[in-house]
Length: 74
Image (cartoon, rainbow, N blue to C red):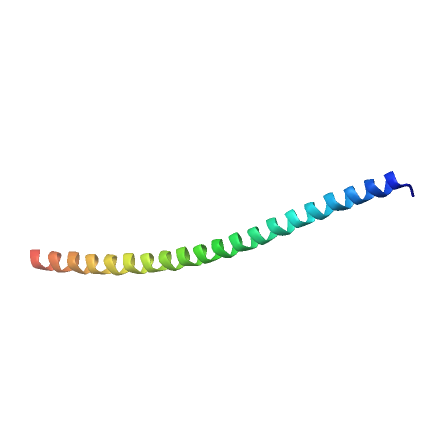
């Protein structure tokens, strides 16, 4: 292998090393972002469940009040 070919291979390897490092960084970033999104999703699911529960409680109370009002009319 000539010196020129060795230099070309070294340049190619260095470029590959840089690209691999970039991919590793991108992978790390995406893992952190994915974890953050999973936590946010879990919080939203919990918040939704809480809101559904509060809505059902309000519906029950309103239905009860309507029933009492109707009974007062008669």
